[in-house]
Image 1 (cartoon, rainbow, N blue to C red):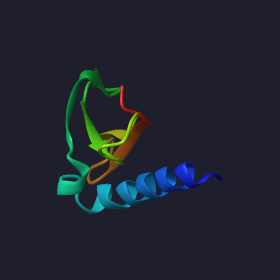
Image 2: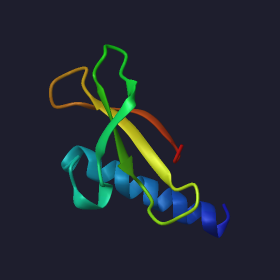
Image 3: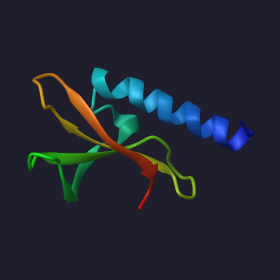
Image 4: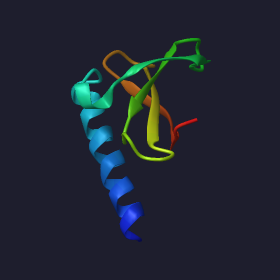
Length: 79
């Protein structure tokens, strides 16, 4: 794994660990992603795994389907 890919993997891993602990953690900069809805019409949120990086990775997620559960919809470079 190259240095850039390793750094990206580390950033995404850290963000995934923060999500269930505190989806509103300041470093995630979570906000609703209004262009997308979940499978059951639920709101989808966009959390930052990276910042100030070209094609910075984002984690798209929603609450559910069970109470106290978060479902990751996609992990992708910023659209």
